[in-house]
Image 1: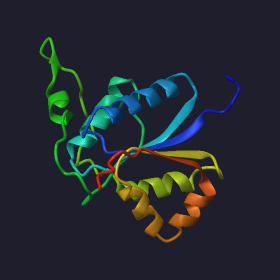
Image 2: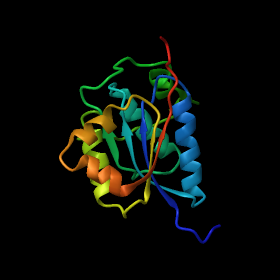
Image 3: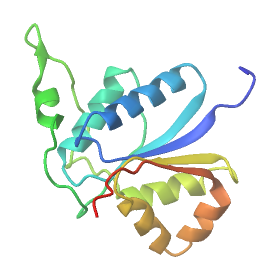
Length: 167
């Protein structure tokens, strides 16, 4: 139903380990273009600064320049993953494929603090929080004063991807 208000979404990603997060982000950007979702922010739960550049430039490649970003300083998975550097280094006819503006030196806020800010600005039970990596940012949010209450009051659905069940 086109008359419905777009679904508010915060996407928490460990962009760079494999392709699934890039595909999920592309789907969200497509949904936003079609008026189905409103991406309030993208927070990164992979502690490799190249993830900031990738997410920023990927959004810009999709003509979305203003989505707030957050980054997990001192978090898990500092490795480069399989595709961050090759994709950021890729060019077509001598022109870079992706052109990031934001990077680790851009003053990107801490992810959990950015989620807190975005939730605080949202209507009650209006946000879908999608997490496709380690739950570091969500755990840190819940540890903040008022974080748990904010999650309960503002998040209508928490969607988690999981997949490492080695025992």
